Length: 89
Image 1 (spheres, helix red, strand yellow):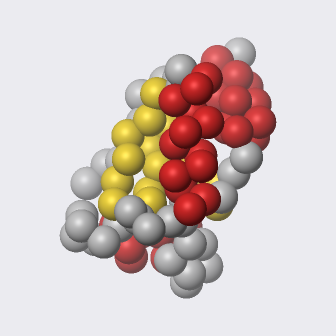
Image 2 (tube, one colour):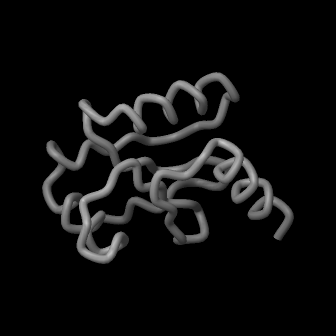
Image 3 (cartoon, one colour):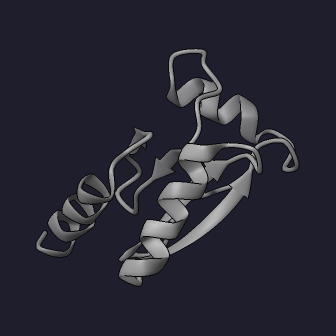
C-alpha cells in the first residue's frame, strides 16, 4: 500500500496508547493541518514499515510527508516547516 499523503497533509503512524501521538494530533487539529492516522497495531504491514523508517524500531508517531520523506516524533513546528517548504517547491 502507498501511504504517501496528498500535498499539504501528512500520514501519521500511531497507536491508541501513544501520548506523543495524541499530543501531535491535538496540535495538528488546532492548526487545521490535515492528516491520515494509521494505527500500526491494526493495519497489517504498517508496524514493519515504521520499523524500516526508524532503523528497526517501532517508534510512533512516525510522520510521512508528501515528498516521501519521514520524521520520527516531529514537533508541530517541524511539521509546519516541512509542509511549508514543500509548498514552495
